[in-house]
Structure formats: C-alpha cells, structure tokens
Image (cartoon, rainbow, N blue to C red; front, side, top):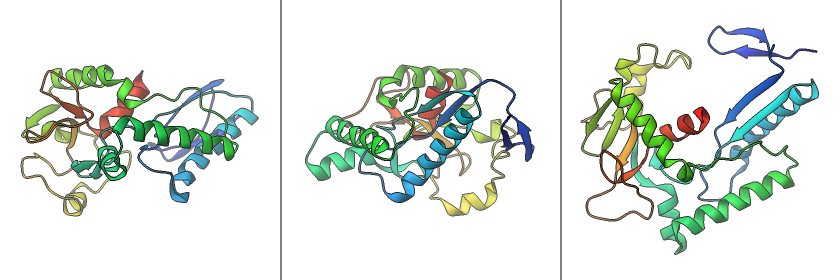
Length: 223
C-alpha cells in the first residue's frame, strides 16, 4: 500500500512513489531537558517514520542537534541559550551540550523511538555553514550590518509562500533591528561581541563569530 502525504505547496495529497524517503527533522537545542511540548514534535516525527516503515518504505531519518546559535530572542537578538545555561550552571558550554544531548538520546530510548539514521551536530558542521553563506553571498542574497551577515528576503521572490507568511504583520510582531532591510531578514553569521569572548566562536571570512540558528539545519540537511 502506498502512503499519501499532504504536499504543502499544492495543498493536495500525493502518493509517495519512491521506495526510499529522506526525512529531515529539526532537532532540539540542547541547553536543558525537553518538556512535553518539545516531545510532541519528536513523537510526530516518529509516527511518520513508523507509518512509512510499516508500509515498506526505506527511511533515511536525520534529526540534528542544535548546540550553538539559538538566541534567547527569535529576532536574532539576545544571548546564546547554551552559553547562558552554562553560566547559570557554572559549567562550560561543551559540558552543557554533551549533558543534554545524552539526556535527549536516552529519553528517546525510554520513549521507544526508532533511532534516527543520523544525528548531526551543528558545531561539527561549521565549515559547511560558512560555505553556504559564501554561496549565498556570491549569489547576492546577503548583506552585512554591525552584528552580522543577514539573508535579504527581498531577493527571494517566493519567501514566505510555503508557510503563507503575513510579512507585514510579522514586522509588527518581532523586535526590529533598525539596520535590517526587512524585519523578516535573518542572521546567517553573527559576530562575537567586541566587549566579551564567547565560549563558542569561529573564524570566518566576515570576522570571528558563530552561525545563525536558521542556517544550521539548511547546511546539515543539504549534506
């Protein structure tokens, strides 16, 4: 029996014809234990994988670990959640991410999840992320402001179409960085603060910094 899935773009159900399904699920930011709302997402992933496997599909499931770059504000502002938690617990960022990554994987076992094929980690794919920013820069999709390199959403004509985003309304909903060309533009590479040193930062063609949260999954999914 063939499985049908809803095609987000066309809003129509379509039969999954391929015998192998490649599935990428955005994973947790590993700075604290997951709560029941977080687990709802991963239960949905597991239900989809089980359904596909039950009907004979081979599934290549990837769930990433976000261990850097997720700021306290979704408007690309604030402090890195991992570094903040490290300070609160009197620990290092590396110890925090290791601790909560292991807890996430152990809790997946306790909940009887099917193990993902691959669990890539953001900090182990920094070069891939830098390369992706270079590619976007070469194609004219980026611009630089004081705190980082940003994606210019006005250069991508269909930005927001898949999710039916109300871009005008979104501009009023999130904090506004006056240097951003559009409120919905997002950080690809953030510069480290000049007055302090982060635990997690890397050299790049644009300066010392760290990847933007939105960039990480794009680079790991492509790989």
